Image 1 (cartoon, rainbow, N blue to C red):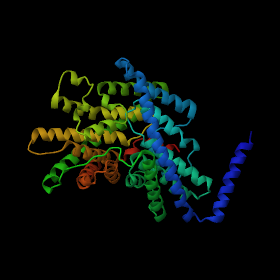
Image 2: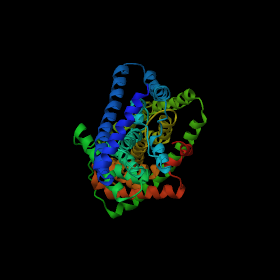
Image 3: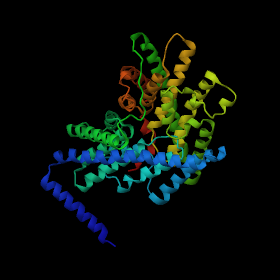
Image 4: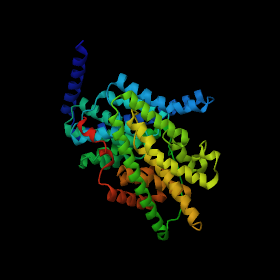
Length: 453
């Protein structure tokens, strides 16, 4: 029974000795970074397909059922994820980014091999069943595990293992969003990886390779393509500053609710009750606003294409009110409830990410702001799509406290480089507002993670 671990250790020792004999670490780490980028980029593509496959199967199977059956699906997804994590994985894989930050802060760079697959499987259940969050947390955790285990196999020092953990996490974000600079800045702004020449080069290299791998698998196109006709003029800069303030204030509300709901979920010791409590909140939120179902990229795509009324479709509001008033009410409702739905998807036993919810909320914030400006100042030609994109960057910058990552991620994932400067203004102002209101980092809101390695 003990021969298998001994064989495993002998293989690792032989590979480590081979690497030490033939390659210097500083030369070998960039080579490993390329392989980490390839594997993680493919896993990012695979995760997208898994989530889409589960969601398609559910909608095909239950498309003819009565509405309450569809409402129960998100609750069932949280319960199934909880069962998978507790009884199959038997290791807490929730809040992957928070765990990564905790490990890096405590200089612990070894990540269990099972993390290379478990978060992807659990996330496909949570999000495929309608969890209102994102896939970036699980894929970042998966990528970090890939980097950590590659480093372990070839006997790298803890310092170089830390670099490869950052490479894998950055490659995960870059691959899932097709955003190489966004993934790179995630490692620097969110994970706060130490800035050295070798870390900068390898993390950026891994992120670029991951994006290229994802492109090879899925096709050379953006997932949310958008083209703007807006001609920037200094005369409308005050409007972008006001919008940045709006995004910052909403980001403070969003972060506060997420923090409060996390504390509430943590007080529930019975995991079944926690799953049921959070799953019920998620199900009710989706019943009131079906746009909250899943990651929300389909709604963002609709807004980019001009279908702004898609946020009102199949809601109770649409039965009683129509036109712009219904749209404004729906936007307000979505902004108020999105943080509750996201916290239920993340904190109540689901396995998902924190970035996609801020992108969705930002798109709704941009639409709402554009509607208000259009009502008050009809002479201003403020395109809805442009404000949707700027809102995505503004809310992510404020909520996640990572303005540069938010800026490049939203620009790269849409391919709309013409809005770079307006997006920079909105992201910068939003981040400034949130820092005036709170000096806490978004991922430090779960203080209990500081004790978990």
